[in-house]
Length: 255
Image (tube, rainbow, N blue to C red; front, side, top):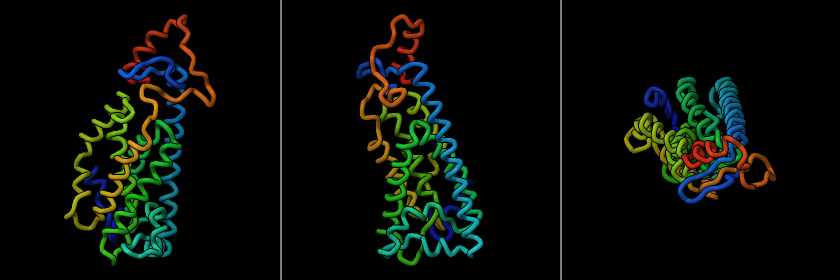
């Protein structure tokens, strides 16, 4: 998210329920859980593809109207009439360079945040948009209309980095470690002193993402959602020759 120049060069800077188990780890439901995760990942891909497509369509309309949408629907600190715009501001940008720099990170971090559940991701997105926009509304200087998707980007980044820890899931934890190591320098535009960007929007988004990882964590540590609505959580068939393998993978958080 940013002011009149926010986000430019950001990419350049960025570039079924467990059947058994205990507190030491989680046990997946075998192939059914793997298939469900793949289905959610596929859904997440199309959700993010559609989201980015909508952002670009809005940019076309915004550009055709000489960026009147950004001026009219941006968040302005202290202006009560712009409070509802915390939801619309992430869809708006100030230039083609602005939207280009945000699109790649938005898709990548959005997909990683969404692939374990689109419904949870939508709740996260609303939370991040609110925290990013409200931090701008309360603390940004009052003569700037702030728009841009980078508040969401920072929120998704924070969520992905710590989600695995709260969910006690090995794969998500490893993804978080890799993302943190690879993109830690993003945090340099979430602190004061970065010219041309709304570091407050970035910081607010990051706070929302970290909070979202806790709020939307798995409420039953050591378990995964059932393969489908109403699916029973009975014991895995001991006659299944792969039962032991599934249990070991589940204990490692791989299912």
